[in-house]
Image (spheres, rainbow, N blue to C red):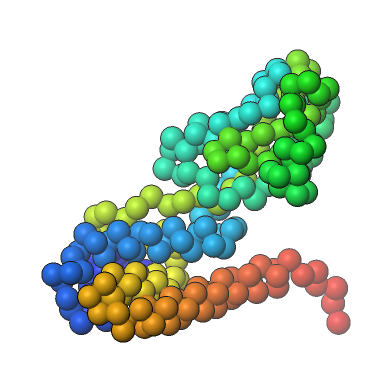
Length: 229
């Protein structure tokens, strides 16, 4: 069972010498929430923050920019786009819209002004901040066709004492990640803690990697065909 928010705070404070003057509950709580966000941003596709939205985005005629804020208004802001599908039920066309090779830099070089290009079923996308850009730009035949977005989301901050992390099995990683923030803060008056904070962060990263590696091993095993002896 995952530790409650208040217990995680206590663990971090205890490791750092129970200094509740410099390491208040509120401050440590912010570091724990930041640590959870750091892990989600660093490793796309974690199972606990996996979500597919099939209703918020639809193609619009002569529109190539789609604001992810329509999804971010919920408790599930987009951290990483894992997949995007174009759905045309009338023609039974369902296919992945692929991330553009070369990213934004190559996109801007290749498509200087997308409205001047031909319209059609979108084939590629890039993300610019919270704007999703499509090419080709949808035309009238694609109007209102759904876009299915598979993504990792940033979990809401823990705030109540009984809240638990959205990431299961990451308690130790979250604790030591937050400890690294705490000791970096304390290093302002005790510079020797800078190195300790770096070691704490590296340890937290290893803990997270081990947890993630185990989860992925299960996924690989479950997807293997059983062809008998």
